[in-house]
Amino acid sequence: MYWTLELAVYLEDAPWPATRDELIDFALRSGAPMEVVENLDQLPADDSPYENIEEIWPDYPSKEDFLFNEDEY
Image (cartoon, rainbow, N blue to C red):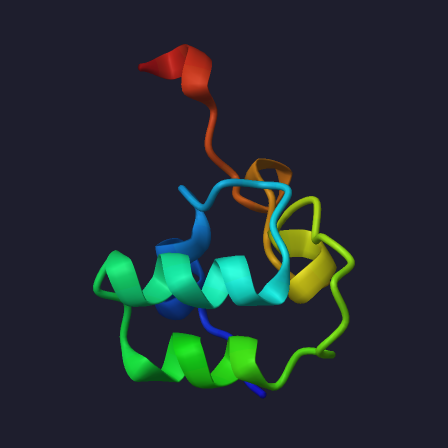
């Protein structure tokens, strides 16, 4: 399983919290690339919900990771 920002962006609008099956369904309905569906399919098959994308991809960058000052714009 590998994640990139280009793939993870397809889950930003997912209905959190969501189970693996709900995320797969969301990815298919939203037209996400098959790599997203394949990555989600590799998650454990239990019914415990994921609260956000950081639980799926712990290295998901947050706003603090970028040197962008929103006050300047």
